[in-house]
Image (cartoon, rainbow, N blue to C red):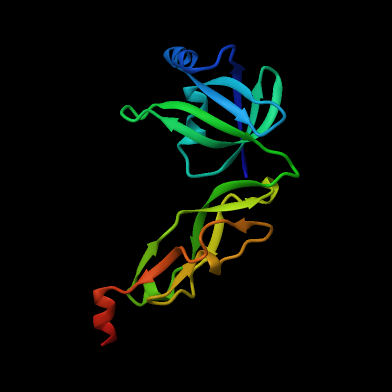
Length: 187
C-alpha cells in the first residue's frame, strides 16, 4: 500500500460553532479515533486533495503536534451544493488489529466472452475486506480470461490470502453479457 504523509494542527475547541469558524479560515476539522485517545485536529484543503480524489487506497502517516499516528481515511463529508470538503474522519491502525476497508478491483486479461462478441459489465469496482493492514494489496486482481459469454464472477467465487471478503457472496463483481450481434452470430 502507498504511504501518504499528512500534517495537522491540534484543535483547541470542538463543536458546531468551532467547526464553522475553522472552515471560514479555509481549514478542515478532522477526528482521529480507534486508538487510546480521540484526537481532534485540522488540516489544509490542499494537503488532503491527493488523498481524497483518487481511487487508490493509502496508509496515512499522520503527524499532529509532533506525535505520529498510522491511520486510514475512514469517512469524508462534503457540502451538498458546493461539493466542498467539510469534515474528515481517520481511523488509527495497528500492526495486530484487523480493520475493514474497501479496496479497488483490477480486472486482468481479455475474457473469452468478449472475444465472442459479448460485453463486459462491471458490477463492483471495490470490495470490502477485513484483515491486517500489512496484508492489504493496492488492488485486488481478478483474472477474467476464462470468463465465457453469459457467465459471471461473484464475490463468493474469488479468494485472497489473509483477507476476509465482507460483501454479499452472490453479488456480481464482473459479467460478460450477450449482445444482439453475438446472439445473431451464434444462429
